Amino acid sequence: MPPIKTFYQRNLPHIQPIGATFFVTFRLFGSIPYATLRPLRASYLQTIAKIKRENTSERNMLLWATQLAYFEAFDALLDQIKSGPLYLQETRVADLVAEEIHRFDGDLYQLICFCIMSNHVHLLIDTSLQIPEDWDGFDTSLTSFQPLDKIMKRIKGPTAVYANRMLGRSGQFWHRESFDRYIRNNREFNNVIHYILNNPVKAGLVDDWAAFGHTYYAHAAK
Image 1 (cartoon, rainbow, N blue to C red):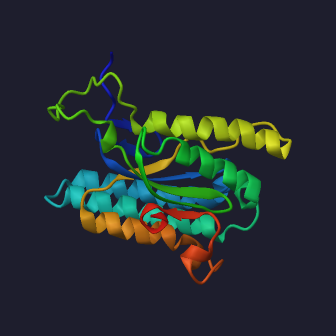
Image 2: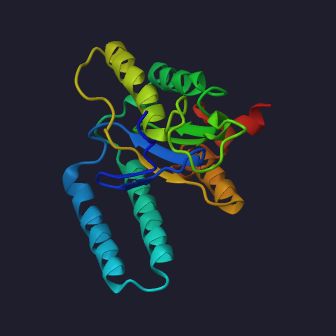
């Protein structure tokens, strides 16, 4: 069994510690025009390169802050765009995605909260329930563990097929790369919950997150 990948790089870095809690954002293919995203991404890459060249004692903190700022700007673009694919605003499609997210709750992860917007999804999950009690914290060859990249394939793959069928379309449904970051402390955990739940409020769709039909919070559901 090959070791579980805890880091890989595509357009974005993906740091995925075994058993961590993850904030994930995934979006519809074509939801942000390349011409719109290109200057934001170019500025991000320039800043990251500068931080790495300087190699100061605050390097890791600066890299983290830059990645967070990039995500917030990226997410603001998703909320502002009113054209392009908005398939998730159809209740039947959003219900399909919600059902698939719930499917793995209690098996591959503990589902904490999610919000399904018109062109993207925010998700917070805790994967620690997959960790056996006798795990030493170092073994990366756990045979039954499903890392985040595989979890996302299991969510995005079927929903793409069934959503396309519902909509009578073909072709790529989701953008291949998701944005993910692992939660480092309790303060960040609570901030992310607030961020996810209030996404439709920030977008001006509702006054109270609980009034939005495709927001879920496990604590509120109990």
